[in-house]
Image 1 (tube, one colour):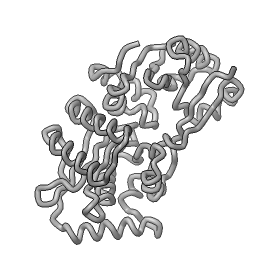
Image 2: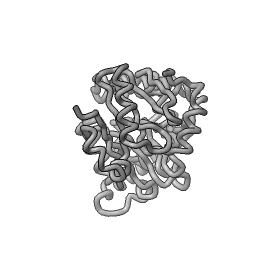
Image 3: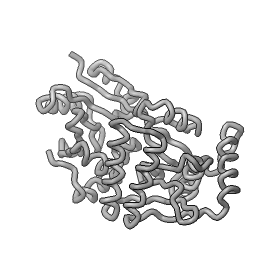
Length: 290
């Protein structure tokens, strides 16, 4: 096994272009920005690419042609020699539909906290319909209050400014906890590796001050993943505007937006569900039945 490093970006991109995965856990940027925190590893197995998170004993569903359930069982047994608690994760729904015998061989579980939210980009721009009307109104209020706001590209040169803004966001919301501290590190990693990752982003500025920013990257040919999105909680509508401007920026390039998971946080779940996702990508795990 080898630890995933920046030098492996072309290799990861090559695999994921040939065998695309919609789950944000397979996203190249996530594999580096979060993966360097968890020391993600990879290895070749029967002409497939297998990713492994040693901290949690997670064996990613292999990238490549689908394996038979018996082969997955053999793979997991081998990984259990490394970590007795190893489990297979990110099993696609369509694989389970095609291989019903999986239920006889594995204990399967779906973790709602780690499901990805996917939206149609055009819908996130238009925000049509009664249920999204409030968000449209908040955007209008923001635009009236700050008519001269600007949307600018995010670059590595703005690294320190972005980190300071994120720390301020954290303090003002009184948000603490292990996950948020880890997220701060992932944002820092992303900015440090910016020029070597297939990543992009925008900043919303008002009077030369940051109001919000977002960071995103390609997931598949027709899907982008939004990794980080922060805003000034004291500027009404800033959360809705950064969401809207991100969708406007990506419209025409990607049909779908993957806005990642809610990690079981009630406020985040409410925010993500309020935009009426078109689908959820389930986080399905498997352990070998005794």
